[in-house]
Image (cartoon, rainbow, N blue to C red; front, side, top):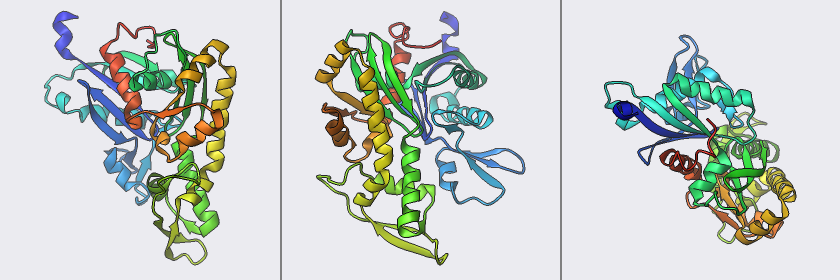
Amino acid sequence: MGFFDFLTEEIAIDLGTANTLIIHNDKVVVDAPSIVARDRMSNKIIAVGREAARMQGKTHENIKTIRPLKDGVIADFDASEKMINMFIKDIPALKKKWLTPSLRMVICIPSGITEVEMRAVKESAERVNGKEVYLIHEPMAAAIGIGVDIMQPKGNMIVDIGGGTTEIAVLALGGIVCDKSVKIAGDVFTNDIVYYMRTQHNLYVGERTAEKIKIQIGAATEDLELPPDEMAVQGRDLLTGKPKQVQTSYREIAKALDKSILRIEDAVMETLSQTPPELAADIYNTGIYLAGGGSMLRGLDKRLSQKTDLPVYIAEDPLRAVVRGTGICLKNLAKYKSVLIK
């Protein structure tokens, strides 16, 4: 090491289906949507992140927007590699260097990932100059990011609801005791809203509009203490073909999302039923921790709490819990050696 240390930079990446976050020197330097816009004629990538997200649903035939990750894993190898590359080049501290530094990276992966998918993540990282690449399971990173001491002989349950997958895991002694990964998360919620608007209001809305509805008035239950105001939604009328606007309330969105949330509830119950008795006793005392963007859905914590009869806590910055945990691992590689996959 020694002499060449100045040539090595350390970064932690949370490669998510919906958003990619990168930590460098303990600061979140990149927080952008995982979207790439490609020119079909020249096959060149013309925009990534926020810029590409603004184009989504508004492109002509020569431009295509791609989401390189699906269900938490790489679906388009080439696009994901270029996206990671462009994000890394955007890091302010690395822009100033005249030599391209080699990178020591810690990257998050879903707990239900296969060996092949794992290799795809690793190869993508190595192609963008990653000399040392470590992988960490998302629920593990989320737990560290929330501030749970995962090395203790004590059970903790994490539910991480991301864009592509919901990761449910019971952790103890720095390992995953039992876990379940279901492909129902933010993206499915968005599609549920699109479907509901079509069937109930004859209104055809795009993905971006549905996402906006989810963030502004999305709810998991119909009885909220502080209900959000009604929202005006614009789209295309399926009967007349004209643009139209309808009013929708959080109660309707709660109805639209009900089936998907039920499946997440079932997965949580199934994981609890597989938990060894001693750890179940710990979880009864500590409760369940929620992380990921999906946990910000209004009333979801209350609904899970009613279903499981356990206290449910939401991480203070759920969107960044996973990347924060990854950053902590990067700083204390020696301490978390057993958690990381080399």
